[in-house]
Image (cartoon, rainbow, N blue to C red; front, top):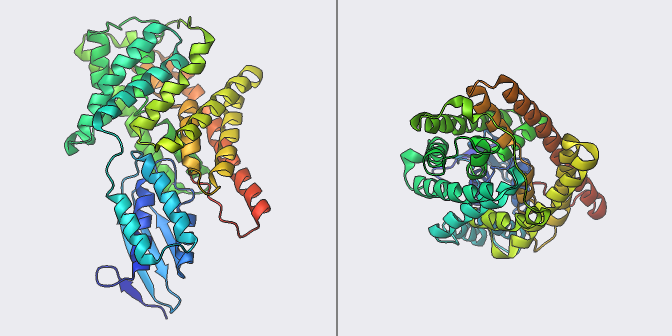
Length: 426
């Protein structure tokens, strides 16, 4: 009969290493929890224990089974986020050293504690520039004209100030999406006078709001539900929906403060007059913006940029030949397959880094936001059209990612054998 050793009084370095690894993985699971169990099992196996775990979105229970029959149980809590990509890559390198036997449990625990305490690689002002580049680089994909790009850069700066400032004040962090979208809307209406711009004011604001639009969260939630992780996926879906309502609510509050009618939020005819080469080049500042905003390691940048162009190129060709939904499905399939195959090589960044930029390119959260604001403005037909597009493309993106990860894992296991260490983590 096994016994349970309470975490508060006892526990070996292996136990505490598994617990800290679980907390780290949970905290950085914004893009999904698909491979979290497998990573913990691999770490435990390297040190002679069997690890079992159960995830509850922001909480996790870990059971470490020792060879002598004893068990060590721990509950960890962490809010999933996407703030430090450098830590994600560094943990990947550290976990490879753990599983290869290069580190003792004590050494691995010390390395992980050091990683947790590491400072941001970029100063706060570079993150502000990052959000501005993120917004301006994404703008041509929404509406290809110079006014859209200029407005996106200005509004991106507003959003960056709210994000950087809000992260330092706990009470503001809770309602950051609402505060950010309200500030962006007020500046758009009061200073930029974007009450009746081409495409409608919401389309002009979307690039600035995009850093908070939970499109990747929505896709991760759908994917988790699709593969049977119902509890995690359902909670993530509810949280993502709440953030969308906060963003839409902030736009409505900003409109009310500026005396703008909600009927003006409905999109008008778009104007696209930028040359095609600018649309191609725009993904470079966008990728730089992603790197600065989410603290990417410098040596991982080209992998991120490659994922962005693969996703955009395949989607562009697929949409042109087969339609938007099918094009998005193919882009997600190629992106996930490539990410899993390339990310499982030693010395390369994890699949998340390779895939993340492309997921941003393909994400569909902006359609849901436009649909909600159009509905608030009385545009029932426009709202239903945006929400219908959102459901179709979200489905194509979700199943493309799932199929790509599955195919990638199958290829690796056939190449290296059934016992190969395969990570499909997003």
